[in-house]
Length: 184
Image: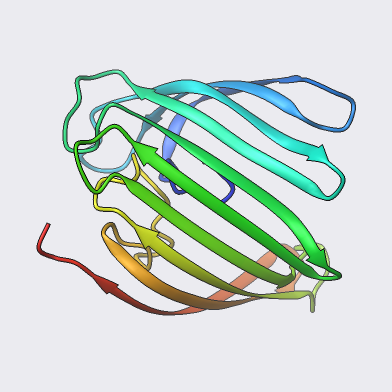
């Protein structure tokens, strides 16, 4: 996906991504080529990204993506700016801003607060999260819809829990309260 919360692009794809270390702390530059594989996708995406730590307790995930076709209902390029930080022990704050070059309603924003987190090698580990979303109708290329809960042109809250009952098994349940503008 592109961005910390996979809003710009996070759906199923086939492709390649390569990275190059920028520093010894884990910051990387990356190039990618992806061809979405969901039904009806007839385009590919290519671009550049940079992700990793940029300071003490602060990391970024930024990307610029271009489509291989003319501007259409999703525009033909977009970018994502993401950042994350641990604000306290077991509390992580993540924010994403996405913009495409579509003619209108072309931004998406999301803020997420995580408490703890799961480790698929540690049965009994768990995590809780809350997330505020404000997705424009044209504010993504192929963002992850998280089992249908994240629709274009919607805004609202999501509350979730993740749990590892057995090694290599992660269970997740979420509740969403959001509105969607069907007029656009």
